[in-house]
Amino acid sequence: MIDGRGNVLGQSRHATPTVGGPPAVIAELAGAIDDAAADAGIARSKLAGVGVGSPGEIDTRGGTVAQARNLPEWIGPYPVVRELSRALRVPVAIGNDVQVATDAEFHLGVGRPYRSLLGVFWGTGVGGGIVLDGKPWTGRGAAGEIGHIVVKDGGARCACGRRGCMEAYAGRAMMEARARKRARKGAKTDLFQIMESKGRTRLTSGVWAKAVADGDELAVKLIERAIKALGAGVASAVNVLDVEAVLIGGGLGVRFGEDYVRRIEEAMMPHVFTSDRPPAVHLVALGDLGGAIGAALLVPARQPAGARSRRPAAGRRTRGRARTP
Ligand SMILES: [Zn+2]
Image (cartoon, rainbow, N blue to C red):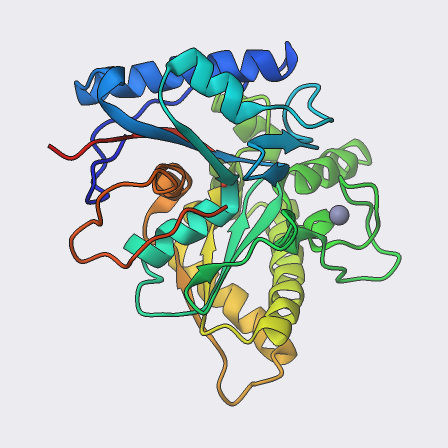
């Protein structure tokens, strides 16, 4: 929940349902928005609207989401905007999750000095958001799929079914699959003990960070492999777009922080064509709230003081934007 100046007034997090398909996700979103409104002390009827940042292929005009592979039973286009606005009785806008996070950094975060940006979100997968000449670039609805840049022809199998994608090396889900396979084959690692001691069932960013801090050999090796892939992939995207700045975010990006952003920058450099004037590389400023803030910015509202002009564009989490008093 944010106000007209982009200040966060309230928030709520709900886990993504694993069964029940799109209707279950919509019901959970509606619940999260009610909780965020309660957290902010604002009645839902007072919201100017709700912005949704979603994975998958987004049709911003039609208000539908298709091929959201990390969501349950979500293949064909589903009318998210229609169903959520029906449930909440407020206007709803939608965009790609990582694109809106990039837009949030452009308007309110570390991207403010620049006209062109590439946002790289290093988490479960690796997503990208693009701002060119001050405007979000969404292509035909699927731009910014930086995770599927090929870094090794015929290389590791990716979650998308293809081979050699950057995400096959750097995405947390694929890194976990690799770690499990290596552990089964007898590689020594504390990754899974750390996971259990934290009460987790997945190798979260926190688990990876602890293992690396402890010097766990397999964890260090897999993170190094991820950074190498990120260097090649992000530099390749930079060579096409020639953006002024690259912003690194996502669960792993935010957790590992500034030192790892510098390591990614170093890994990029051998591949950057304009090596005499490379783009600036920054850690995101809005942390893991960037996606939610960016989604809320999709809702037309009064210009926040000091922020750039905004236009509704392409999004992950959901927030309502409260009308300015
Ligand atoms: Zn892929």
